[in-house]
Amino acid sequence: MSEVAVSVENVGKKFRLYHERNQSLKAAIMRRRVSVHEDFWALNDVSFAVPAGTTFGLIGSNGSGKSTLLKCLSKIYYPDRGTITHNGRLAGLLEVGSGFHPELSGRENIFLNGSILGMAKKEVAAKFDEIVEFSGVGQFIDQPVKNYSSGMYVRLGFSIAINVNPDILVVDEVLAVGDTDFQEKCRQKFIDLKTAGKTVILVSHSMGQVREMCDQVAWLNNGDLVAIGDSGPTIDKYLRSLDGVSE
Image (cartoon, rainbow, N blue to C red; front, top):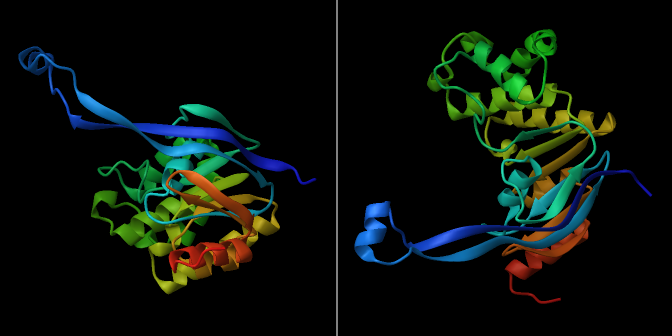
């Protein structure tokens, strides 16, 4: 049996949806009523295991819980029930420029973001040239990142994340941003990571991309795990469901 890189066990995550909300203590006293709300479960008892050294995809329509689950994996959110465990260093790239300070330069943000991802300053310095070269923003590396385009943001953020040398890389739609050359560099980097025995967990709305890159996928719908299995057959079931074809 393969070693497990990430284990998700009965994970549930809820959010509170307010229909009427008191904005202050004074408002609560004046209205003489508490806020009106309901709990919305974005994830419902989701369980699966990701084998080490594989590329694992999360698929599903908008609002299915994919990004919420990625944020739980990256410890941006914490489950309200269940547990998530991982073996090894985990790095996440979930949003364009996440962890960047807009007033700092690209150079300064490399060291800042590297530190957030658990790298020592010496490690970042040793990887600095490789990070800049992969990102392709060398000409602007000493400019404040607030002046970067969204493509430059994501290229630099992705380059930092992969050069942390993670055992597990969690990625949300990173290949949706950037030109064709950058997307090809990313695709090749994923292949290199897999060859090196690393684990990649990704979300993408491009089923062709998921089919090409992923060994297995988990299909989510309204926070529930519908199916998990080899990428081809599971993607086919998901696409048939969108066309209204029942199994």
